[in-house]
Figure (cartoon, rainbow, N blue to C red):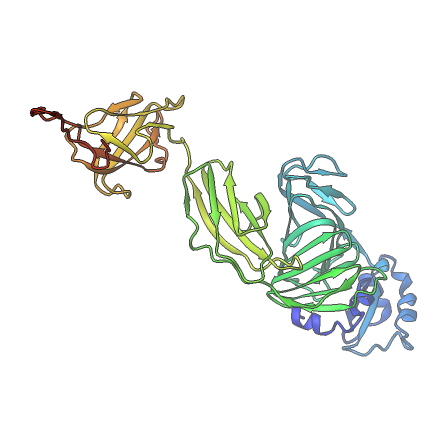
Length: 454
């Protein structure tokens, strides 16, 4: 049974009714005694199946029919979830969280203000919990001698991104339970967020069923790819289309600043934005996770390395849309030195000015370039091995506009990024003509910048 078939069979309240029962398809020759021996922790309790399923003849079951077995009677093996990634001060009822640690059913955790946590379930599914998330592993078990698994993640507050593996057995279930609503899947990518009485449910691929958790009158809904809904007070809202993925084509693939402003084009109906950085394309190793009211964010404090950036908009209900994703290379170190002279857009008299900059403690040398264009495609000066912090300007350069920039070079020869290009205008030095005398006055004349007043 695929995801679509599973959802199709979920009539109103079916999600709540079947949550604590396992449907066993009857095979030719099956009896309740045989089913009890296969599935029950205490096989001699098979008469309870007869009463629960209103079966008259327990020795003549109809092939193709279904016998519903209460989970409480079944023979299970308890499983654990592995911590594959943890960032920040993530705490749990089992102690300080660390990679390789195993969480068991009943263990709870809190990612704190700046933490993140990724769990790998026994079937290979992953669950990534962002900062400010409180949750726990509610259930993790497998029916003996079968591939039937039951996994329940409790989400008290915060958010979780999941990538669930397709279930081999139709009876297997993977659920995310918020205080009032449960989301059930059979192999898909989806997100769930919870904040008090409000929860949001967003499907990226595949399909999920959303229904009541407990006795709340939530109703039931089906969500397909690129759909979501918001629930409040245990009551499901309308299924809506998620916002599309933002356009990231204008973002730099290479970042050469320790503080980089990132901006994407606005999305219609987007009320806020979410920005995430991870070391892997699956975003199981989440490093940064922030929200902004505008499609603008400042990327800061990332060591040089290769990363992945993920951006999505959220609508007025807080439902987050599809992801825009790209790889970014951070190459911001060593940082360029602070430039002193010439100051940006200065008029500089030829032959009288020096290039100067601040010393850098980590620099072995400095790389200075000067060009007539801002692209530096044809530099008029290229000095990659300067050891001081100043250099005289070449007096032979023709008057006009120039650009200059600096980079730091380490002792191992690694050169950092160039700083921002700074413009200056080179002008001829002033010269004075001999004075002109007449009977009434002395006339003086000199050359200089065309806008020099006198």
